[in-house]
Amino acid sequence: MAVMNCKMCGTPLFVSDGMRTRECTYCKTAQTVPQTITIDNMEKINQANEYRQKGDFEAAERIYNELLDREEDADFLWGRVLCRYGVIYIDNPTTGRKIPACHRPLFRSILADDDYIRATDLATQEQFEVMSEEGRIIAAIQKRQLQQGNAAFAEPRMLSDGSERETEETPEDAAQAAVKESAVLLPEVLGQRKIVDPEMEEADRILARGLLDTRALNNLANRYEKLAAVRPKPGDDKEVRQALEERRKECLEKAKECRYRSATMIMEANGNAESMLNAADAFSNLEYYKDSKNCMINCMDRSLDKARKVSDKLSSASAADRRILSELSIRYKELMDEDTDVKGIPEETRKMINSRRREFSIRANECDYIIALIDMENSKDPEVLATAEETFRNLGKFRDASKRMDEAHKKSMAAAYDRAEYAMKWAYEPEQFAEAAALFEELGDYRDCELQASICRKKAVRKEMKHISNRKWHLIVAAVVVTIILIVALLVWIQPQLPVWIGVFLAIGYLWKRILEVL
Image (cartoon, rainbow, N blue to C red):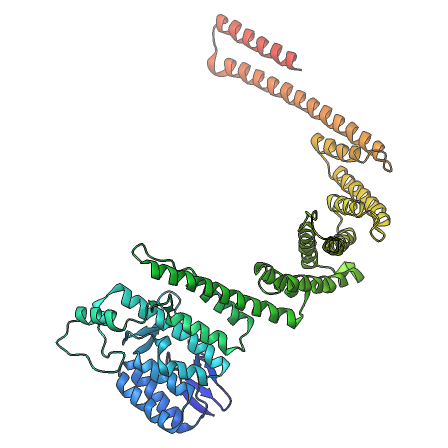
C-alpha cells in the first residue's frame, strides 16, 4: 500500500495493488492509478501532479517521461497527455466539483493525440471510462476556445508537431495560421464525401473496444445522436452537405447499434418483470432494426411470465405489478391491431397472421384478467370493483370470467352499500342526508336500500324543518330586542315629542308586519 495525492485537489489517498481507479474522499472525483504501485512511483507521480497544478507543465512532463522510460503504463501516458495540454483542475463555482481547465490549448484535439490513444488501448475498463470522459470534456474546451477566437486562449506555446512558434508572431496571426494549417478540432471534409472528426473517432474506439455496460452504451448512443444532429451551415458547399448527410446516417446507425446492445444485455440478464418491460421499450424504439421486433415480443413474454406470479398471492400484489400488467395489455393489443388488412395476401401468410393475433389476444386477456383479480381482491372502492366486473364481462368465456364477474358484482354492491351506510352515519345537515339517500337509491332493491333511502329523506326533511323553526325564533327574538332597545333609547336618552313617538311606533309596527309576513 502506498499514498497517492489526488490529481485534482491534492488530498492524500491510500492505494494498493489491484486498484486501477480511485475516488477521492474529499472532492469525490475518480482518477486513474498506475499498474505498478511502489513508493518511488507514487512519490514521482505526486511530484509531477504538484508541478502540473502549479502550471510548471514542462517539469511535470519530464517526470512522466522518466517513468515511461522504465515502463509503459496507461496512467503515465495519461499524465503526460494532461501535461502536454496544460490541464489543471479548478473548482466549478456552480457545483463545487473539480473541472479541467486547458492552459495549453494545442490545435490538435486531445482525442487524436497518439499518447491518448495508446493510453486508452492499455487501460482497463474502469480507467478507460475515466479517460474517455475527461478527454471528451477537454476536447470540448479546446473546440470552444478555438471557435471563440479569444487571443488569450488561441495563442499556442507549441504547434501540433511539437515545434516552438516564433515569439514575434502575434496571437491573431498564430490563431489564423493554426486554423488554416492544423485545426483538426473541427470536422474536416477530405474528399470523396468523408468527414474526419476526432469526437466521432473517439466514439468509434469506445464502441469497438466492447466490454461496455448498459449505462456506457446509452451514453455512447447519446454521443452519436448528438453528432448526427449537426446540420450544414448556409454557406457550405454541396460536398460538405453530402458529407454531413453521410455522417448523420452513419451516426444514427451506430446509435441504434448501441441501443440494441444495451437492450440485449438487459434481456440476457433476465431480471424482474419491470426490467424486461424496459428492455421491450428499448427494442420498441428501434422499430425494425435487426430482430428488434422479435426481441421486443420475447421481452414482453418474459415480463408477463414474471408478472403472472402475483396471481398466486393477490393480496401481496403492488401498484407496480398492476402497472406492468396494464402496460403489457396495451402493448399486446397494439400488436394485435397491426396488419389489420389481410386481403390479397397468400393463405399461408393470412393463417400465420391470424394465429399471432390470437396469441396476442390471449396474452392481453390474461393481463386484463389478472388486473381485475388484483382489483377485486385489494380494493374496496365501488367504482374500481365495478370496473373489474366490466372487465370480466368483456372477457366473456376466458377461463372462469363469468364466475368472477358475479363475485365482483357482489363485492361492488356490498362496497357501495357500505359507502352509503357510512355517509348516513356521519350525516348532520339536510344536504348530507339527501346525498346518503341518493347513494342508497342508486342500489335499487339491494338489501334494505329502499328503506334506508326513505329514512334518510325523512331525516333530511326533519332537519330542514328544524332549521326553519330555529330561524323563525331567532328572527322573533331579534325583533323583540330591537323594539325594546328603541323604546328604551327614546325614553332615556332622546325624550322626543308626541309626533316623534307616533313615527317611531308606526316604524315598529311596519317592522313587525314584515316579520310576520316572513314567518
